Image (cartoon, rainbow, N blue to C red; front, top):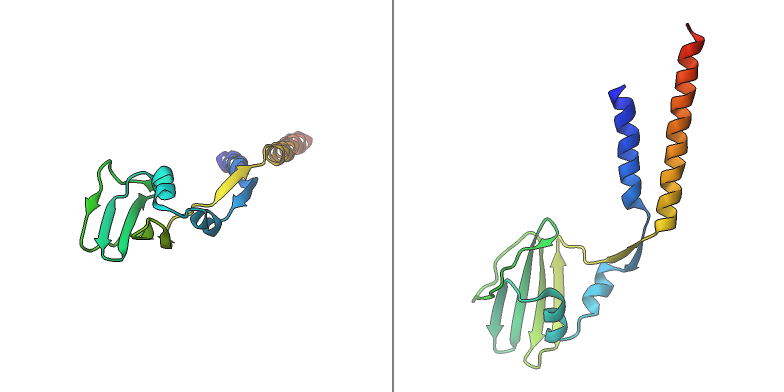
Length: 142
């Protein structure tokens, strides 16, 4: 009986997250940043910064999709290697020359409330219908 309850609860929780629409893909979001000011406005201070004669690179580190850089930026000669990060390269005028992300999804999504409500209602009908049928089935065999 415990498994009978766990499965519908799991499906219901899954349904709460399943009705989303992607507004902007990861690439579209990254491409929307054009200057150093755009990046700083959205991401804040980078975890690491590397300066060279051609410009500079800013590295933002992430842990389980959460930004983990501190309030201060470490200026380094070599950027660290991380599993989840976003890296922006700028020229001397502050324009982005390249961008790269690994292990991070920056896509912007919108929850479709109407579809979610319909899905949850449908699952509830199926769950209660199954419970009603199973309770009637057991009383017939007595």
